[in-house]
Amino acid sequence: MGRRASKLPQLATILFAVLLVLPSAAVAKAIDATNTQRLELPDGLIGPESVAFDRHGAGPYVSISDGRVLKYAGEGAGWTTFAYSPSYTKNDCGVTSELPAVARESSCGRPLGLRFHNNSGNLYIADAYMGLMRVGPNGGEATVLATEAGGAPLRFTNGVDVDQVTGDVYFTDSSTTYTRAQHQMVTSSGDSTGRIMRYNRRTNKVTVLQSGVTYPNGIAISADRSHLIVALTGPCKLMRYWIRGPKAGTSELFTDLQGYPDNVRPDGKGGYWVALHREKYELPFGKDSHLVAIRIGSQGEKLQEMTGPKDVRPTEVVEREDGKIYLGSVELSYVSIVKSS
Image 1 (cartoon, rainbow, N blue to C red):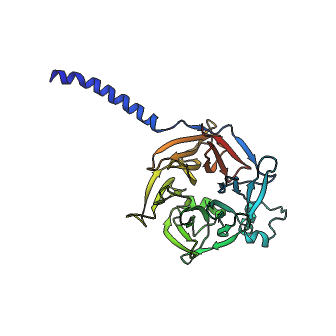
Image 2: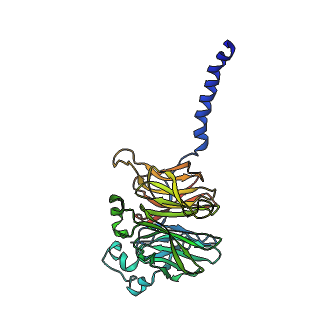
């Protein structure tokens, strides 16, 4: 007994050392988004909310506040108009106006989520006011695919993702009560009228997968295509909705977050980058740095953080194979590019 007891302090020391090492091994070094390269939008334009790249790697394509989707054609060529809604043309939204963009959103549209279907080259657009839209590889005026689901109008169409195998499109309607212009009310009122939907490109029909959701925003299909990860902005959570397997048609908590999430994008490694518009308990004073994004693993574990100045409140984080990370923002006049290492 005496010999066994003498080894206990040593075992305790080893165990304590292992516990100290494990967390640091599981979480990668934080990324600093303080000094970034900027792709400035043309003068007077703001709000590159979503960032996408086509099947050839061209882009980025961004959804902006005046109702258009722009494409970055490279240094020198700059930004060109790629897509717009039928209402943009009908209401002469290309004409200079003294009204701020937010006052024209309901008539000109406000594209938010963007995702390409690689096989067809089609770009799917979740427009907050116009509904779910699609435009071909050459761009131009988009086709409106859906303005209602389950007998209720799409009032705040927000996030979108595409199953690259079937071509089915998954998207969110953040509220059936409030529009995007009233987005603060969705959070402050605890509105739980949001919905998760699927558009079947073969039948052109929309199915409501789940209703009564609290502020569903960004959405991403998992690498194995078995489930969706949905950002719940007000609750500061990620939800998992099963689309295949024994749990199909059910949802569950995926993970809690330290801030208010916007879009969710696959990180190319089985996990997800989640843009955080602001931290849950963020103070206006103190150090000019806050959590702007977090990388979450396939089981909901925290893998990596990204920090940046408090005036940077990203709405989408997209990591490319070359290690560059693109940040979209609903408030700023540029797309940020950060190096992952």
